[in-house]
Length: 100
Image 1 (cartoon, rainbow, N blue to C red):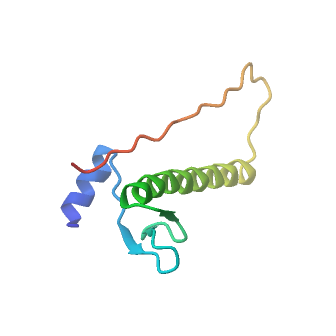
Image 2: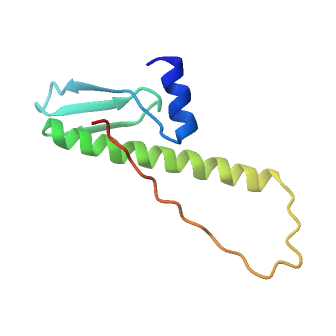
């Protein structure tokens, strides 16, 4: 992928991940691995199933990374919470865009 395309993706908020697929030797299914997220893998009986599963795995890995980073920020920071009238937790649902 070209540097220009990566920059355009970053600016637009779109993130692209490189995924490799392998035929599973033991059970005849498929294995997928996301190259940008070490350890992010999935398996499935068919190519379609493994693609669905790796998308779910990528979303989960990103959610964990974000949560870990946010927790680290909160723990490392002394925030004065006196006078706070309300606290709210916002949940952002990831949106996956697949290449056409």
